[in-house]
Image (tube, rainbow, N blue to C red; front, side, top):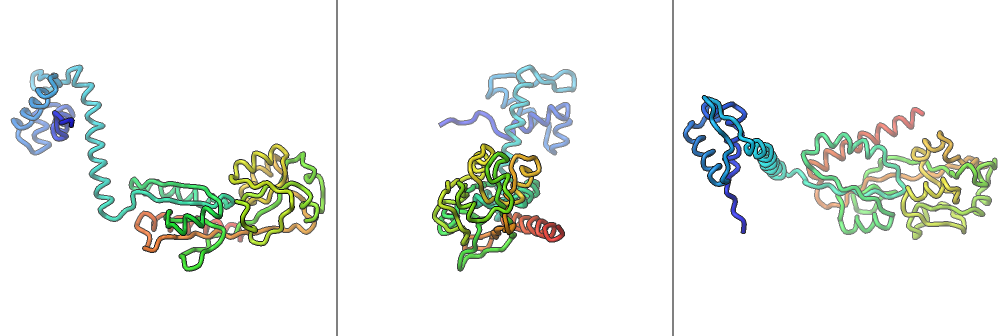
Length: 299
């Protein structure tokens, strides 16, 4: 097993002598005797077999080797400070990791806003953000494998918070046969290929589906296929709005202008109350989803 030849304290003293311009000045700042600083640096240089400092008059100057080791040693002491700070954070109950699972078809702009605001207050907490299908959400909730799950339905006997109502609209490429029609009936939709953003096992909350359907597991894949004129899809209005404005996709002109809606629920699978990091993120999530709902009401 490797045994270090130096200590963190020796490197801190070495840095202090350089930063304050000499042994006497560093001793005063560190509230240590000058002889103890001389001894620490001398022992460090002896262990390394290198000269790091040379005294010129009353000033301690770096040697070429010392310049290299000064840069590297600063990272070492910063890493140690970070480790000790992390220990303080974890001992206070702050979670080191938060795992978030989002159902693929749900829009998530407010979530991104909350995560952006959380970053500056995260205190080193890592975020694992995973997209999955409805069946995947159910598995995660059953196994309590995430701190929070964004799902399109609530689950019995599990804490869930209603966050938002999302409007879905039918869209296709400009060159798709449905794009130029007006007053499209549901029976006409059923004759076209539909891209369904789901796992194929659910009934999409009672939404009628045509016989021709492809099951798409990721929103990115559905949008890529739509751009190429493959099929049509019911997608969240706030997701496709920029594409509609740019003419990349068009909204199908339905006979009754029917809209489909889906709720976003924030499910907390754990049996214990959220910790401080999760509680902070939850408050930010509710804040930005509330703001989105208020804007929707005004519009």
